[in-house]
Length: 321
Ligand SMILES: NC(=O)c1ccc[n+]([C@@H]2O[C@H](COP(=O)([O-])OP(=O)(O)OC[C@H]3O[C@@H](n4cnc5c(N)ncnc54)[C@H](O)[C@@H]3O)[C@@H](O)[C@H]2O)c1
Image 1 (cartoon, rainbow, N blue to C red):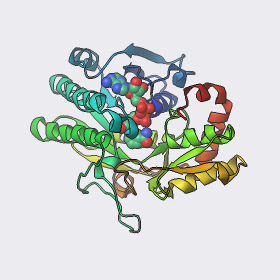
Image 2: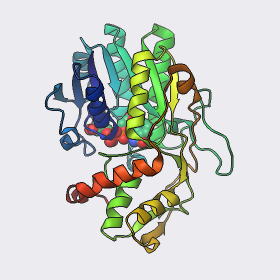
Image 3: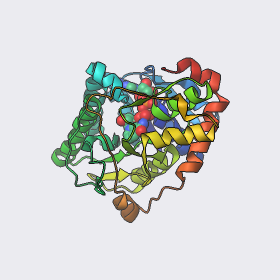
Image 4: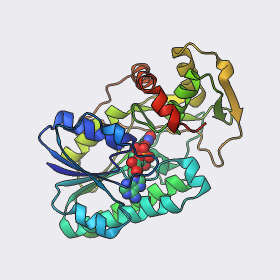
Protein backbone atom coordinates (compact mmCIF):
# COMPACT_ATOMS: atom_id res chain seq x y z
CA UNK A 1 0.00 0.00 0.00
CA UNK A 2 0.94 3.61 -0.46
CA UNK A 3 -0.14 5.60 2.60
CA UNK A 4 -0.38 9.32 3.19
CA UNK A 5 0.14 9.86 6.92
CA UNK A 6 -0.50 13.41 8.08
CA UNK A 7 1.05 14.66 11.32
CA UNK A 8 3.57 11.80 11.27
CA UNK A 9 6.25 13.75 13.15
CA UNK A 10 4.05 13.97 16.24
CA UNK A 11 3.60 11.48 19.07
CA UNK A 12 1.08 8.96 17.73
CA UNK A 13 1.78 9.55 14.03
CA UNK A 14 5.49 8.73 14.44
CA UNK A 15 4.73 5.61 16.46
CA UNK A 16 2.23 4.61 13.77
CA UNK A 17 4.77 5.03 10.93
CA UNK A 18 7.30 2.87 12.80
CA UNK A 19 4.63 0.28 13.64
CA UNK A 20 3.39 0.15 10.05
CA UNK A 21 6.85 -0.29 8.54
CA UNK A 22 7.64 -3.04 11.07
CA UNK A 23 4.54 -4.93 9.94
CA UNK A 24 4.44 -3.92 6.26
CA UNK A 25 8.06 -3.34 5.30
CA UNK A 26 7.38 -3.14 1.55
CA UNK A 27 4.76 -0.39 1.79
CA UNK A 28 5.33 3.27 0.95
CA UNK A 29 4.59 6.12 3.37
CA UNK A 30 4.42 9.83 2.61
CA UNK A 31 4.41 11.90 5.78
CA UNK A 32 2.85 15.36 5.47
CA UNK A 33 3.56 17.45 8.55
CA UNK A 34 3.48 21.19 9.20
CA UNK A 35 6.33 20.83 11.72
CA UNK A 36 4.74 22.69 14.60
CA UNK A 37 6.43 22.84 18.02
CA UNK A 38 4.93 19.36 18.64
CA UNK A 39 6.75 17.76 15.70
CA UNK A 40 10.13 16.11 16.00
CA UNK A 41 12.22 14.51 13.23
CA UNK A 42 14.04 12.52 15.95
CA UNK A 43 10.81 10.56 16.47
CA UNK A 44 11.45 8.77 13.18
CA UNK A 45 15.06 7.72 13.62
CA UNK A 46 15.41 4.10 12.49
CA UNK A 47 13.14 4.06 9.42
CA UNK A 48 15.88 4.94 6.91
CA UNK A 49 15.73 1.55 5.13
CA UNK A 50 12.04 1.91 4.25
CA UNK A 51 10.26 3.64 1.36
CA UNK A 52 9.52 6.90 3.19
CA UNK A 53 9.14 10.48 2.01
CA UNK A 54 8.72 13.53 4.22
CA UNK A 55 6.86 16.60 2.97
CA UNK A 56 6.67 19.77 5.04
CA UNK A 57 3.20 21.19 4.52
CA UNK A 58 -0.11 22.18 6.07
CA UNK A 59 -3.39 20.30 5.62
CA UNK A 60 -5.23 23.59 6.03
CA UNK A 61 -3.75 24.60 2.67
CA UNK A 62 -6.14 23.00 0.17
CA UNK A 63 -3.58 22.89 -2.66
CA UNK A 64 -1.20 20.86 -0.49
CA UNK A 65 -3.99 18.58 0.73
CA UNK A 66 -5.16 17.88 -2.83
CA UNK A 67 -1.70 17.40 -4.28
CA UNK A 68 -0.66 14.82 -1.70
CA UNK A 69 -3.96 12.94 -1.52
CA UNK A 70 -3.70 12.00 -5.19
CA UNK A 71 -2.31 8.56 -6.08
CA UNK A 72 -2.29 7.11 -2.57
CA UNK A 73 -4.29 4.09 -1.37
CA UNK A 74 -5.19 5.51 2.03
CA UNK A 75 -4.90 8.67 4.10
CA UNK A 76 -4.56 8.42 7.88
CA UNK A 77 -5.06 11.82 9.46
CA UNK A 78 -3.17 12.43 12.71
CA UNK A 79 -2.43 16.09 11.93
CA UNK A 80 -3.92 18.30 14.61
CA UNK A 81 -3.25 20.81 17.31
CA UNK A 82 -3.57 18.48 20.28
CA UNK A 83 -2.98 20.28 23.57
CA UNK A 84 -6.13 21.33 25.48
CA UNK A 85 -4.30 24.01 27.52
CA UNK A 86 -3.11 25.71 24.31
CA UNK A 87 -6.65 25.65 22.91
CA UNK A 88 -7.89 27.46 26.02
CA UNK A 89 -5.34 30.25 25.44
CA UNK A 90 -5.96 30.60 21.69
CA UNK A 91 -7.96 28.24 19.52
CA UNK A 92 -7.41 29.80 16.05
CA UNK A 93 -4.86 27.20 14.96
CA UNK A 94 -7.10 24.45 16.32
CA UNK A 95 -9.93 25.59 14.06
CA UNK A 96 -7.55 25.85 11.09
CA UNK A 97 -5.78 22.51 11.41
CA UNK A 98 -8.43 20.37 13.08
CA UNK A 99 -11.47 21.53 11.09
CA UNK A 100 -10.41 23.29 7.88
CA UNK A 101 -7.57 20.80 7.42
CA UNK A 102 -9.97 17.85 7.65
CA UNK A 103 -12.42 19.57 5.31
CA UNK A 104 -9.63 19.93 2.72
CA UNK A 105 -8.68 16.27 3.04
CA UNK A 106 -12.33 15.23 2.67
CA UNK A 107 -12.69 17.35 -0.46
CA UNK A 108 -9.63 15.61 -1.88
CA UNK A 109 -11.13 12.24 -0.92
CA UNK A 110 -14.35 13.27 -2.69
CA UNK A 111 -12.34 14.00 -5.83
CA UNK A 112 -10.00 11.01 -5.81
CA UNK A 113 -12.05 8.39 -3.92
CA UNK A 114 -9.14 7.67 -1.56
CA UNK A 115 -9.69 5.60 1.60
CA UNK A 116 -9.63 8.01 4.58
CA UNK A 117 -9.27 7.42 8.30
CA UNK A 118 -9.77 10.19 10.85
CA UNK A 119 -7.86 9.73 14.12
CA UNK A 120 -10.10 11.28 16.75
CA UNK A 121 -10.44 11.37 20.50
CA UNK A 122 -12.79 10.26 23.28
CA UNK A 123 -12.81 13.92 24.42
CA UNK A 124 -15.54 14.65 21.82
CA UNK A 125 -18.00 12.94 24.20
CA UNK A 126 -17.30 15.31 27.08
CA UNK A 127 -17.08 14.22 30.68
CA UNK A 128 -18.55 11.38 32.76
CA UNK A 129 -19.40 11.63 36.48
CA UNK A 130 -16.56 10.52 38.76
CA UNK A 131 -18.55 8.04 40.77
CA UNK A 132 -20.31 6.12 38.04
CA UNK A 133 -19.74 3.02 35.99
CA UNK A 134 -20.91 4.73 32.77
CA UNK A 135 -18.65 4.46 29.73
CA UNK A 136 -18.73 6.12 26.31
CA UNK A 137 -19.67 3.96 23.35
CA UNK A 138 -20.25 4.58 19.63
CA UNK A 139 -23.80 5.77 20.35
CA UNK A 140 -22.85 8.32 23.02
CA UNK A 141 -23.89 11.91 22.41
CA UNK A 142 -21.20 14.36 21.31
CA UNK A 143 -20.64 16.93 24.06
CA UNK A 144 -17.21 18.57 23.65
CA UNK A 145 -16.36 20.90 26.53
CA UNK A 146 -13.16 22.69 25.51
CA UNK A 147 -12.00 24.30 22.24
CA UNK A 148 -9.72 21.35 21.35
CA UNK A 149 -12.43 18.72 21.70
CA UNK A 150 -14.94 20.99 19.93
CA UNK A 151 -12.69 21.17 16.87
CA UNK A 152 -12.17 17.39 16.90
CA UNK A 153 -15.95 16.91 17.21
CA UNK A 154 -16.55 19.26 14.27
CA UNK A 155 -14.13 17.20 12.17
CA UNK A 156 -15.90 13.95 13.11
CA UNK A 157 -19.22 15.50 12.07
CA UNK A 158 -17.73 16.49 8.71
CA UNK A 159 -16.44 12.95 8.14
CA UNK A 160 -19.84 11.45 8.99
CA UNK A 161 -21.65 14.03 6.85
CA UNK A 162 -19.36 13.32 3.89
CA UNK A 163 -20.07 9.60 4.27
CA UNK A 164 -23.80 10.18 4.44
CA UNK A 165 -23.84 12.61 1.51
CA UNK A 166 -21.18 11.22 -0.84
CA UNK A 167 -20.75 7.60 0.34
CA UNK A 168 -16.99 8.01 0.70
CA UNK A 169 -14.66 5.26 2.00
CA UNK A 170 -14.16 6.84 5.42
CA UNK A 171 -13.86 5.66 9.02
CA UNK A 172 -13.30 7.33 12.40
CA UNK A 173 -11.67 6.11 15.60
CA UNK A 174 -12.10 7.81 18.97
CA UNK A 175 -9.30 6.71 21.24
CA UNK A 176 -8.66 7.30 24.92
CA UNK A 177 -5.49 8.91 26.36
CA UNK A 178 -2.28 7.54 24.86
CA UNK A 179 1.09 7.21 26.58
CA UNK A 180 4.45 5.92 25.39
CA UNK A 181 7.65 7.08 23.65
CA UNK A 182 7.81 10.32 21.59
CA UNK A 183 5.10 12.24 23.45
CA UNK A 184 5.86 15.94 23.84
CA UNK A 185 6.89 16.79 27.44
CA UNK A 186 4.00 19.27 27.70
CA UNK A 187 1.74 16.25 28.40
CA UNK A 188 1.10 14.71 31.85
CA UNK A 189 3.16 11.49 31.79
CA UNK A 190 6.41 12.71 30.11
CA UNK A 191 6.28 15.97 32.06
CA UNK A 192 5.92 14.07 35.34
CA UNK A 193 8.79 11.71 34.47
CA UNK A 194 11.14 14.60 33.66
CA UNK A 195 10.19 16.67 36.71
CA UNK A 196 10.49 13.62 38.96
CA UNK A 197 13.98 12.75 37.80
CA UNK A 198 15.07 16.38 38.15
CA UNK A 199 13.33 16.63 41.54
CA UNK A 200 11.30 19.59 40.34
CA UNK A 201 7.74 20.33 41.53
CA UNK A 202 5.02 18.33 39.79
CA UNK A 203 1.96 20.54 39.27
CA UNK A 204 -1.37 18.76 39.56
CA UNK A 205 -4.57 20.40 38.36
CA UNK A 206 -7.28 20.74 41.04
CA UNK A 207 -7.42 17.73 43.37
CA UNK A 208 -5.86 15.30 40.86
CA UNK A 209 -8.85 12.98 41.09
CA UNK A 210 -9.72 13.29 37.39
CA UNK A 211 -9.85 9.91 35.67
CA UNK A 212 -8.35 9.07 32.27
CA UNK A 213 -8.48 5.74 30.42
CA UNK A 214 -4.84 5.07 29.43
CA UNK A 215 -3.70 3.07 26.40
CA UNK A 216 -0.12 2.32 25.31
CA UNK A 217 0.47 4.02 21.96
CA UNK A 218 1.44 0.78 20.17
CA UNK A 219 -1.95 -0.72 21.06
CA UNK A 220 -3.62 2.32 19.50
CA UNK A 221 -1.50 1.76 16.36
CA UNK A 222 -2.58 -1.88 16.10
CA UNK A 223 -6.23 -0.80 16.42
CA UNK A 224 -5.72 1.70 13.59
CA UNK A 225 -4.14 -1.05 11.48
CA UNK A 226 -7.23 -3.25 11.91
CA UNK A 227 -9.58 -0.37 11.04
CA UNK A 228 -7.58 0.58 7.93
CA UNK A 229 -7.57 -3.04 6.77
CA UNK A 230 -11.00 -4.23 7.82
CA UNK A 231 -13.07 -1.31 9.08
CA UNK A 232 -16.51 -0.81 7.53
CA UNK A 233 -16.92 2.51 5.68
CA UNK A 234 -19.04 5.03 7.54
CA UNK A 235 -18.37 3.35 10.91
CA UNK A 236 -16.84 4.76 14.07
CA UNK A 237 -14.72 2.58 16.41
CA UNK A 238 -13.95 3.47 20.01
CA UNK A 239 -10.53 2.35 21.21
CA UNK A 240 -9.26 1.88 24.76
CA UNK A 241 -7.38 -0.57 26.94
CA UNK A 242 -10.01 -0.49 29.70
CA UNK A 243 -7.54 1.08 32.06
CA UNK A 244 -9.04 3.91 34.09
CA UNK A 245 -6.65 5.69 36.45
CA UNK A 246 -6.83 8.85 38.53
CA UNK A 247 -4.24 11.45 37.47
CA UNK A 248 -2.84 11.56 41.00
CA UNK A 249 -2.33 7.77 40.97
CA UNK A 250 -0.51 7.89 37.65
CA UNK A 251 1.81 10.53 39.10
CA UNK A 252 2.36 8.47 42.28
CA UNK A 253 3.19 5.38 40.18
CA UNK A 254 5.89 7.36 38.35
CA UNK A 255 7.30 8.69 41.65
CA UNK A 256 7.37 5.16 43.06
CA UNK A 257 9.01 3.69 39.96
CA UNK A 258 11.73 6.36 40.20
CA UNK A 259 12.07 6.10 44.01
CA UNK A 260 11.14 9.71 44.66
CA UNK A 261 9.00 11.28 47.34
CA UNK A 262 5.36 12.36 46.97
CA UNK A 263 6.52 15.70 48.39
CA UNK A 264 7.31 16.82 44.82
CA UNK A 265 3.56 16.96 44.13
CA UNK A 266 1.92 20.34 44.42
CA UNK A 267 -1.66 21.18 43.59
CA UNK A 268 -2.48 24.18 41.36
CA UNK A 269 -5.73 25.84 40.23
CA UNK A 270 -7.79 23.51 38.08
CA UNK A 271 -7.93 23.84 34.28
CA UNK A 272 -11.10 25.77 33.31
CA UNK A 273 -13.85 23.35 32.28
CA UNK A 274 -11.68 20.36 33.19
CA UNK A 275 -13.36 17.07 32.22
CA UNK A 276 -13.45 14.84 35.30
CA UNK A 277 -13.67 11.37 33.83
CA UNK A 278 -13.25 9.60 30.49
CA UNK A 279 -14.00 5.91 30.11
CA UNK A 280 -14.45 3.95 26.91
CA UNK A 281 -16.36 0.81 26.07
CA UNK A 282 -14.25 -0.73 23.28
CA UNK A 283 -16.32 -3.88 22.78
CA UNK A 284 -17.33 -3.01 19.20
CA UNK A 285 -13.78 -3.04 17.75
CA UNK A 286 -13.01 -6.24 19.68
CA UNK A 287 -16.17 -7.97 18.51
CA UNK A 288 -16.22 -6.77 14.91
CA UNK A 289 -12.52 -6.48 14.03
CA UNK A 290 -10.97 -8.87 16.57
CA UNK A 291 -8.69 -6.18 18.05
CA UNK A 292 -7.44 -6.38 21.64
CA UNK A 293 -4.84 -4.29 23.51
CA UNK A 294 -1.71 -6.19 24.58
CA UNK A 295 0.29 -3.91 26.87
CA UNK A 296 -0.60 -3.76 30.57
CA UNK A 297 -0.28 -0.31 32.18
CA UNK A 298 2.55 -1.16 34.61
CA UNK A 299 4.69 -2.60 31.82
CA UNK A 300 3.83 0.23 29.38
CA UNK A 301 4.76 2.77 32.03
CA UNK A 302 8.15 1.09 32.58
CA UNK A 303 8.82 1.21 28.80
CA UNK A 304 7.81 4.87 28.71
CA UNK A 305 9.96 5.83 31.70
CA UNK A 306 12.93 4.01 30.20
CA UNK A 307 12.49 5.95 26.89
CA UNK A 308 12.53 9.32 28.67
CA UNK A 309 15.45 8.37 30.93
CA UNK A 310 17.51 7.35 27.89
CA UNK A 311 16.83 10.72 26.23
CA UNK A 312 16.58 12.86 29.35
CA UNK A 313 18.78 15.78 28.25
CA UNK A 314 17.01 16.01 24.94
CA UNK A 315 13.51 16.05 26.44
CA UNK A 316 14.51 18.34 29.30
CA UNK A 317 15.34 21.04 26.74
CA UNK A 318 11.84 20.75 25.26
CA UNK A 319 10.08 20.51 28.61
CA UNK A 320 7.47 23.01 29.74
CA UNK A 321 7.73 23.44 33.51
N1 LIG B 1 -2.43 12.00 22.42
C1 LIG B 1 -3.55 11.38 22.74
O1 LIG B 1 -3.70 10.87 23.86
C2 LIG B 1 -4.66 11.25 21.72
C3 LIG B 1 -5.76 10.43 22.02
C4 LIG B 1 -6.77 10.27 21.05
C5 LIG B 1 -6.66 10.92 19.83
N2 LIG B 1 -5.60 11.72 19.58
C6 LIG B 1 -5.51 12.38 18.25
O2 LIG B 1 -4.41 11.79 17.57
C7 LIG B 1 -3.81 12.73 16.70
C8 LIG B 1 -2.33 12.82 17.00
O3 LIG B 1 -2.16 13.23 18.35
P1 LIG B 1 -0.70 13.42 18.97
O4 LIG B 1 -0.83 13.29 20.43
O5 LIG B 1 0.27 12.57 18.23
O6 LIG B 1 -0.43 14.95 18.60
P2 LIG B 1 0.94 15.74 18.51
O7 LIG B 1 0.62 17.13 18.90
O8 LIG B 1 2.03 15.03 19.20
O9 LIG B 1 1.29 15.71 16.94
C9 LIG B 1 0.55 16.40 15.98
C10 LIG B 1 1.38 16.48 14.70
O10 LIG B 1 0.55 17.10 13.69
C11 LIG B 1 1.31 18.10 13.03
N3 LIG B 1 0.37 19.12 12.55
C12 LIG B 1 -0.37 19.98 13.31
N4 LIG B 1 -1.12 20.76 12.50
C13 LIG B 1 -0.86 20.38 11.23
C14 LIG B 1 -1.33 20.80 9.95
N5 LIG B 1 -2.21 21.80 9.83
N6 LIG B 1 -0.88 20.18 8.83
C15 LIG B 1 0.04 19.17 8.94
N7 LIG B 1 0.54 18.74 10.12
C16 LIG B 1 0.09 19.33 11.25
C17 LIG B 1 2.28 18.62 14.08
O11 LIG B 1 3.40 19.24 13.47
C18 LIG B 1 2.63 17.34 14.83
O12 LIG B 1 3.72 16.68 14.23
C19 LIG B 1 -4.55 14.05 16.93
O13 LIG B 1 -5.49 14.20 15.90
C20 LIG B 1 -5.24 13.87 18.27
O14 LIG B 1 -6.45 14.59 18.31
C21 LIG B 1 -4.59 11.91 20.49
